[in-house]
Amino acid sequence: MEVPFLSLKNITDKYSAEIHQAVSEVIDSGWYLKGQVVEKFERHYAEFIGTKYCIGVANGLDALILILRAYKELGIMKDGDEVIVPSNTYIASILAISENGLVPVLVEPDIHTYEIDDSRIEEAITGRTKAVMIVHLYGRCAYTEKIGDICKKHNLKLIEDNAQAHGCRYGNKRTGSLGDAAGHSFYPGKNLGALGDGGAVTTDSGILADVVRKLANYGSGKKYVFEYKGRNSRLDEIQAAVLDVKLAHLDENNKRRAAIACSYIDGITNPEIILPDRPLAGNNVYHIFPIRCRQRDRLQEYLAEQGIQTLIHYPVPPHKQDAYKEWNERKYSVSEEIHATELSLPVSPVMTEEQTEYVIRKADKWK
Ligand SMILES: *Cc1c(COP(=O)(O)O)cnc(C)c1O
Image (cartoon, rainbow, N blue to C red; front, side, top):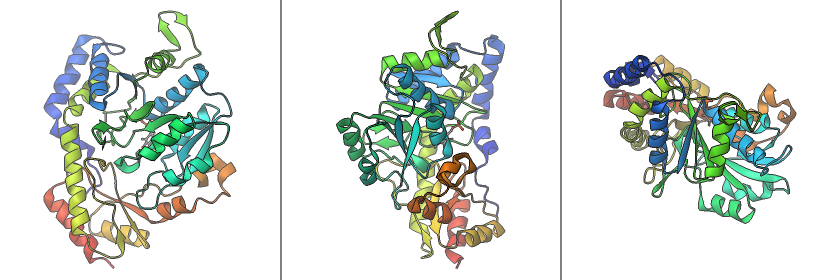
């Protein structure tokens, strides 16, 4: 049996008729940027996340860059200020901070949740700290009450990187509505994916939303009037049309991911494999199903021989990358442990029961 990690083709095929219809309407309308389809998607997405505002942008990295840039324009942050971010995140979270002339301060994750360790945030705060960027990594909610309290106590902005967790819940709220602003990515492989690049910023702050919207439009809110040295970062009408179709099916697809994850958690009993915990009340949308294993590379090879495709998220931590040479000598031992042992099993919403059972059986047989 073959189990691909993620078949984008199968996901698109599932909604093929609706997507073709929506895209055709845009093509036939003759209006491709800054139109009603983006506006409608922004309204639907804000409603879904539970924020007052949503601004569609070109991609997830831009969403995070624009949030921080807006805080700089508003005089809330300045060059050299510090932003706390987890050391094991996908590098884009950190790039958004550097790009703005701000200083990323890496804080280790918790070895059980893989999310930022909230007991280590306060010791990282200095006089220059202006924000905490939490990342709902692998689709699991990283927010804790403690993080909210720390941000209040030290007057820090709380920014969410929600690129991997569209639809994830925290109590009766959704991630992307828990802090001051959130960046979302609609890269094709994300839980809510476009057929190309896309992203969004969500926030309850009208002031922030206004500045982000202008910055993404050359710094302009009114034609030929430029308030900021902005950039061009747009979500286009065709991608918005696709996203609007897929948004309506997001919860059902996330439920399917969680069901597969629960089958793995109940089914895999191999003592060599460390499993993530069961999701509590929707607090995990399993963008990725991360297991850990001492002999990760051997396990990956064995699964590949059985036709099961797995990936590593991520093989090299940000502080060991050439892009951050200045950090190469530092030691983040929890991150390093995760990067050395993590393996992602397929958990796509188009996986069948047979494929799920097959993965469990094969994983259990390995030693
Ligand atoms: C995908 C991703 C991003 C970047 O999104 P793009 O749309 O690819 O620019 C940022 N942060 C995290 C955690 C991601 O997984």
